[in-house]
Structures are given as C-alpha cells and as structure tokens.
Length: 452
Figure (cartoon, rainbow, N blue to C red):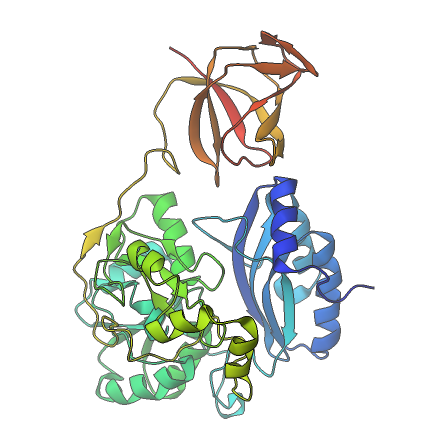
C-alpha cells in the first residue's frame, strides 16, 4: 500500500502536462476530534492518491487543513472521500478564482500537533464559541459601519500585496504573534466596536474569533470562507470589491488576483509590482516581491550575495550550507535588509499601478459562435490537439475558438485538419479530428466555430 510520494515534482509536472486534464485548485478545513490522526492521514493518502489529488494537508487531533489540486473530472469522487466522514459532510470547498495545473506537484499529508500554529492553549477557552460568519454582501455592509474595526489576520508578506480597505494589518511573521498584539491594541473597544476579521480561507479566523470572544469582545464577526470565498461571491453576485490587490496563496501560484490594482513595489527597484519570488539560492529561499526586469537581472535572487552563490560550483554551495539550518524555507517569513522597498504594518490603499491585461488569456471574447465539441487529448511535443465533433460540421479554413478555465479564450484559423486519421476538408458529427494547436489545451476545453 503506497503511503508516500514516489515521483519528483518534475516528473509529476510532465505527467500532468501529458494527461491534459483540467485541474482545480481548492482549499478546505474542518475542526473535529480525530482519535487517530496517523490512521486518518494514511486512509486519506490512499483515497486521494487514487484520484490523482495533490496538495499540502495537515491533520491533527483537532481536525484537518488542506490546500489541494485535483482533476476537474474527479471533483465529485473527491467530495465523496470527504463525506465518508461525518464531520466533513456538506463541507465548504473554497475553489480558487484562478487555476494552474501546476499549483501543487506532490501529495503531502502531515500529522501535526495543530492544524494551524496558533500558540493557544485550547483547554483555556471554548474553541466552538466562534464569531458570526458573514458572506461577501454582509461583509461589505458591516465594513461601511463606522463602528467597525476590521483586522487582517495574515502575515506581513500576505497583506502587503492585497488587503481590505481600512484594515489593521499587523506587522507580524506568524499568526500566533498577531493575537496578543490585536488584543492589546483594541482592549478599549471590547463593548462599543464590531471586531471584524478575515484571512485567506477562514481557518485562522475560526480560532481567533473564539479567542477574542473569550477575551471579552462582544461583537465578533469573521469573513466566511476567507478572501478566497469572498472573491468567488463577488463574481457570482456582481458585488463591489472592498478588497484591493492580490490574495496571497500557499501554492506554486503564490497569489490570485482579486482586483487589477497593484499596491506594492518590487523590493529591489521600487517599481509597482505584486509578484512574489523565492530566492534561487538554496541556502536562502527568501520570499520577496520582484519585477520581471529585476528577475532577469538578478536571476531570481534577493541579493548580490545570493547571486554570487548560485554561480559557485554545487559542492561549494553545499559546503556553505553545511551546519546551518536551512530546511524548507519556501515561505520563509524573515525580512532582509537587502530588500530596500519592503513595506509592513500600515499599508497603502492607493493603487500604484494597474495590471496590464493581455489580449489572449482569460479574456471573454464577444463573438458569435456555435459549439462544435470538446478536447480529448493534447500531444505536447507535436503541439497537436484531438477533438470530438459533437455538433455541426468543421471545415478546413474555419475560424475557431478554443475555450477553458485555464486555457482562456484562444482564436485560430484551421489550415489543415486530420479526420479519423486521414487528411480531408470536412469533419462531421462523431468524427475524431486532430490539428496543430500552438498553445497548451486541456481535456474538456470546448471548441467553437466562429460565425461571420
């Protein structure tokens, strides 16, 4: 019985590309009493590995905290593996606004003392006495109340690229640091103010709201499902975003855009930028903001020292790290004196720049079109896509649109088509058709004929 990864991240990335499946990035959490976390962990690994589910998951006696990537076609089967447990029946899955097939490249499930390192003694207060959950519309309304104090319970590198307007953004490196700081800062407003809190997916607020109610705060509220769920509801309900900028996420994407505003700067040159980079030096891996120009000039490094190190022979790089605690510092929270334009604490709410939209990715193209069928395979090396024609005819010379959540909306004109293995001019309903596609497509991408 396989209980651990047997493939490297690089091997998994190739398999994902070859499979051509649309993947969904999602997160969820649940507080519950788990008697045997190790057995729970092993059972989940077996079930999820069979579904090609990947991600970073923590389990403990107090519950589960998960960020994951799963094939879209396995979504319902994945939900069934959760609902096999009573405490996860009907659980909310926070599906990402933006998807990336490579958001996670391993299935890592770890047993921890706690699913979030909050530094609290849960025996000293009622962890189930939580604050009032607010949906996006309700959250927007309470933010307009002058008696509201809104607090960001994320870390400095998260709030720097995006936060709610007028929010208190503590200059902290861990969640546990923020609790006593906020308690002291707001101790005179326990009765007369609405304490409204938010985080990435809601899990930090779940414990924090109970903690602050125990501390004597009368009116405690939290954003249900965090920023991830808030962004989803904005789109579904057409609401105004009170959040400005980008939501930092803990996977290979490092963020998903909520508004087109850029409120942070490249830490090296000061240019408006909100794209995070991990320092290329294996002995550093500092997480920092870096623009495209500095990324090229500094080769993904945070300093000239790290730049010099990555050009040393590997044996010398290893020697420099020997005896030092390096470990996995992909999200190292320490700050560096080398980062001249790093900001924390009180953060700006005025956009420094606006994201430049590309014309071909994730754009809804307003054209008259008719559905032809869907993608079934993509041959990466040959850059050839295979489609099944389910409606109408497709002819050589037709202008088509290929559309999907990750692929975006891409137009092209067909110069040549192969139908059921032979080159011809027309594909009819039921035919398998292949043709060159100069961009990556996924299974279940739709193909449309554009009408004049």
